[in-house]
Image 1 (cartoon, helix red, strand yellow):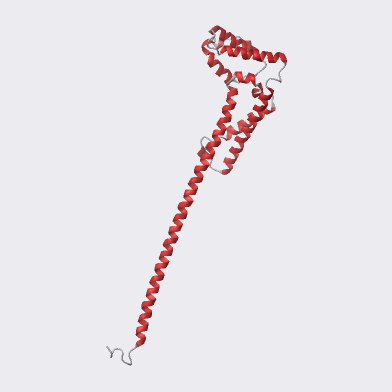
Image 2 (cartoon, rainbow, N blue to C red; image 1 turned 90 degrees about the vertical axis):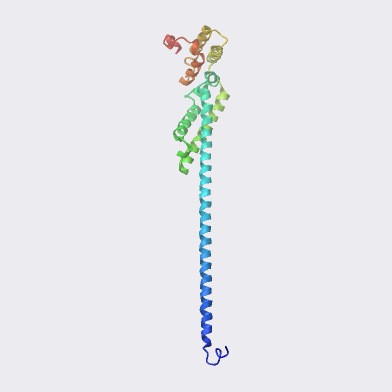
Length: 233
């Protein structure tokens, strides 16, 4: 053993071997670190992508929810408008809501047409922010125009009519109450309806939907349409 380390032994070989092994170890360590960093980076990227997809999905769900809420607002205003279109008594009480000579009535009817034209078949049909903004603005304009017109109609009621015209409106209102009264006889109801139509002739332009809804309520009491006196229609 002593002879192995005697003078003249190439000690530098030991240092070379140590350096080789040390370098290999460092290289392996560095390789492991690079691999770990790459793995961590891929995992971070995967988490970021998952979070991005989650946010996109949440955004799309919120977007659909907002559009559905907007469509519901649109439906509510249309339902309020239909209360006048389908109720002759309400139109007699607030005649401005059917009077297309009134600028405020024209405004809300125009706004309604715009909103109805932009309404999607389903929330998913709106796919761009510009389209959503256009529809939202139209619905809000419809809401506002309707509320302004309704407020004014309730304020003025029948003030635009003369004394005799208001009397005719009141008479028509009482006759319509009788026409839908199931306690009255069929003859009484039919006569009341026909007289109400005569009182309203020239005063109010009743929507066809309102007439149809009213006639449906008293249909069993009415004679066939062909037999109705022409002046009453």
